[in-house]
Length: 379
Ligand SMILES: Cc1ncc(COP(=O)(O)O)c(C=O)c1O
Image (cartoon, rainbow, N blue to C red; front, side, top):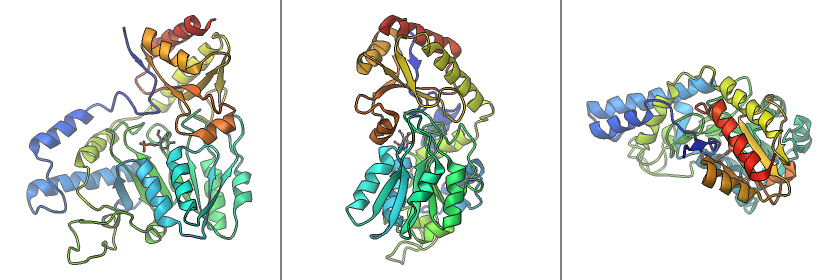
């Protein structure tokens, strides 16, 4: 049975061409520890790590390569930001569409005296930026928000919220997980002070590598949560004051970084268009499936290539199971680590079947999936 991968929101497949070869070559030729060994081979890898920071700057329209910090994932980056930047007594605002990568660290810091409010999105996942502004109070230090919902793909109003943050003197942190790599994101235009990314979704790199791009202002007010060897300023018992070393303790994930380096050189022209074409075809096809209710935006506007469907009157888990078991269609079912988003969309607690598309998906795959759904739940 042909397998159809519609779970790109979880992790992209296939990765960019050449990623696995780049990783193999690194391992075969010696993944020498950078910032430690004083030999040519380690310096060469150091150079490629720096280039990766520069490629990320280019992708996110940011000027300071040394303010690009590598972490294992966007989850870690958000934890570093939320726990390292916020202090007891601070207030922070998020949206009601956040992934647990934002909500759970916020709930943890709440226990240490940080308060937070979630600006309520509507049943399509759209957020009125004025709701964010209305929640700002004197103690508000940051707004933390995802770029696009991982449940239904709806874009959050980054530009408007960024402008509000700039005007009101509040830092703006963005979880770029479901937007970066497919859709352009300019930190300058969107007034983003800290952008957290993950390498394995639409950036098309391997899992286990992510990071954050920090303004000097954010960096200077953020405690490094992880301390240890950096290969620099070894006489100091405190972390070095300069970036990126201040936030990069321990041996770096060179496999991840070199894989990501290759992925970032991939030409992404037309990728967003293609993924939205696929999304639109799927949404159209869904109209012929009995009681299939797609939540979120109705068309291709203001969204990423993620569609969440509630098969009303049916068991979503059964639909997802049969799709995979009988037709080879891989999806994700449930709450997708974002319970508040489902409460906003009206799909809590039953959740949805999530179809998330990638650059390699085809119209034929969409048509086969729609046909399978018509057989499973009825036409
Ligand atoms: C919006 C959003 N934030 C955060 C994450 C967490 O990503 P990772 O597991 O790579 O840290 C995801 C991935 O599922 C996501 O969709």
